[in-house]
Image 1 (cartoon, rainbow, N blue to C red):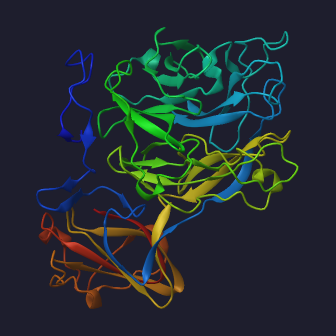
Image 2: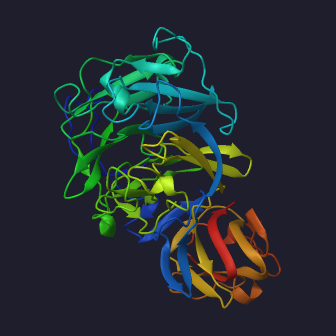
Image 3: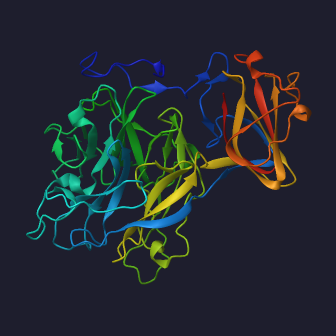
Length: 476
């Protein structure tokens, strides 16, 4: 568990009231020594946290590849405004949850639906027989007649102390549905049959008119919730809990230079391969723009990307992660909404899911794929460039890179002391060129000195690249 800068007590566990809002340091940051304690964990170049200097290189966002359509939302209980998807990979398989709703103003109830998959690629609607739709129970509806159907957001609870019959959890609620601003908690043993955790809301106050969400954070040892609120734009607040019932006072997310960006959703969760990183795929909403003259509403959207290392401060990339693209239907309002959830769909592949064609009869959800850990990179063109990291310590005797070079490109590595002087045996001219494309390409120096001799000492890493990308690294 990660230490707190200001310690606090969870209501219901150690005290009847919150002592202080939690304030975490980025994982591994040693403020007293002014360095990062990396250990042997996987580190991704998804923000500028590790970077001290860039020269001729840049931090670059890498767009995912559009894959197949996962599901078209065209069943009678679904429709043109079906939205707010969440994707889970659990021991029971893959689950894709979403709101089923028709044309705006159509007199019919909203429902919550689920599709299932053995691999995250091929999806089917299970015939659950739980709720009746127009006299027939042959449907995939898991929730009906509940205000939470508007924005039901499930997750799989990996808290080791979670009771088995509450392993699936969800939050849902809406500003006007209960005549208030209340978010309620739901639980399930199988992800299909749900019940209220308690009648009273767990969070109240903000408008909540979006996909509010929660998750278990194994690094920080608590639940975290992200909820919609407004400043002068749509944005979000965060709160924490030890028991999923008692929550700390809401705290505004610090988006730095991105504070003026409208974020319709956050799709925030720990990255399962590097859980100290909270990754978000917010739907960015440009409310005053209109591209399609015949579309009934203004506003265009795309998928963004953001990172937090302390569950409070976020590096929000200014560029789009996924643009609306060439498909005309995705330039209408509220399309391109990323689902909450990052899942692995192959030995070397991760997937996210994004809505398309909102307000259209072809409203659907598409899968997008990325190679493992390759959300962003340090990139240099053929003329070369370099990055020098902040000082850090590490554990291990080897170093591997997740990187890609052209046939004529390469990457070389130098290890330095905190003042920037090359360490003997680890100079740049002694590093054998790293050439190729792989997730764990080894870095080797002439005469193969062992890194074990400098493990635990403060060092800096100098990466020099020619026509190459470095996405992540790890000491082994």
